Image (tube, rainbow, N blue to C red; front, side):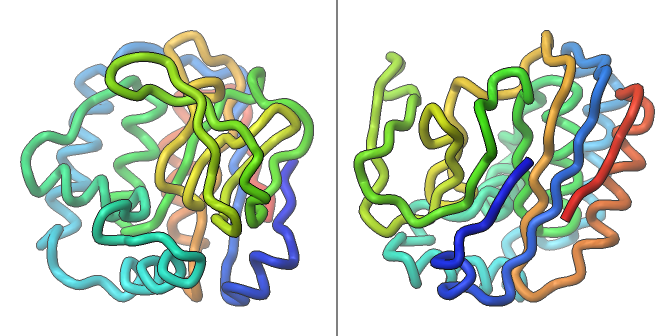
Length: 213
């Protein structure tokens, strides 16, 4: 399902990743339930811009591989910033679910369509020649990660840049997604409550839900 390269563990020995696999998903457009989950998570998080030890750990990790967390923060911090500005979007039911959990626990979570993933997803330090399909100036574009950047990739290319900063277009969850994988990432924290919350929320949206670490 996924693997973490030794070079990443050498950089961040306290890194932990869980994969939560949901099959037979009943996804669709955002609804009252998913929007309410987002709103409740924002309320439970308290001061969204206050210093948070887990987000500080992610900032240190980003700096360790050459990224600038003030400009390109980890996904959990980016979500909290958007929520604090009042422009947190509802995307679709599955994305709303994992975004709510990410905001509540200040923990990066990524969601991907398993049908679009090729081979084993690997967390690696990039060589710099990998491809990353994204949107730039409103148009589809191909980019390359920086040498040494921590990225997720599969057999076709980079699926997420700067560890968990930005996902590619190819594996994004859509309303047509049937099988999904959610990567829950931590640095020196207990991820069990995060995974339990995510699994509980997915219970009404999928036929089966499994967790791997």
